[in-house]
Structures are given as structure tokens and as C-alpha cells.
Length: 133
Image (cartoon, rainbow, N blue to C red):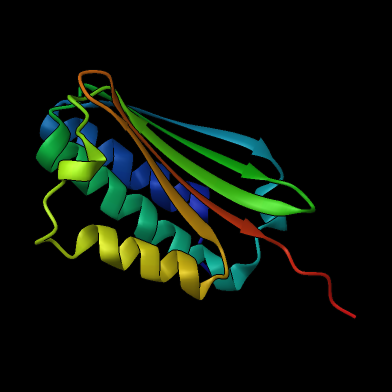
């Protein structure tokens, strides 16, 4: 079955609000239909892993997921208002960051993590659409 990326993310965030008391929101910029179907599962899994990290490590009160889709690229940003961290001193024992990077690589995209101690973290996955000949 085809994954409805926005609906699935909204459902997961709603569950998190109920269970963990974290306020969440989803923003969509552009036409999500322009997001290739084959990318949706990996983008969803990256989003969920980033959300799990926000809940487990960040002590966040608010998480916003922004999906940007246009003819050239798809971008997903997960931003929290948690405690942030120093990327140079991040724990390397978990599989979460590695798995997210592998999924982004599989799509031919990039994964940027922008932590700021005491002000939260943004994770951005961006995949450029390749022109077909």
C-alpha cells in the first residue's frame, strides 16, 4: 500500500502528544504529491527516528515537522526545543543517527544535524530530484 507521508506522520505525532505530553505540529510547504512514492518510506522512518531521539534524549516540549516538496527537491525538517547537544561530544553507541544517514544516502540525499546546546536541535534531510532523460 502507498504510504501517505503526511497522514502517517500526523498520526504518529498525535500518538506522541497523547503518550508523552509533547506538543507537535506538521507543516507542509508545496505539493506532497511531488514526493516520489519510493522515497516516502525512508523519509517516514528518518522522521520517526528523529522524533524518537527528541523524546528520548532532548527533553523537548515542542516538536515541529516541516515537509517541503517542489519540482526540484524534497526536504523534511524535524525541529525540537529540547536541551540540544554538542555534536562533537555526542554518544556514538546508538544506531539511530547511523541508520538515518544510511537512509538519506540510499535516497541520494543529505542529512544535516544542527544541534545547539540549550536551544534544541534541527535535523534536515534533503533529496534532490534527478532529471530523467
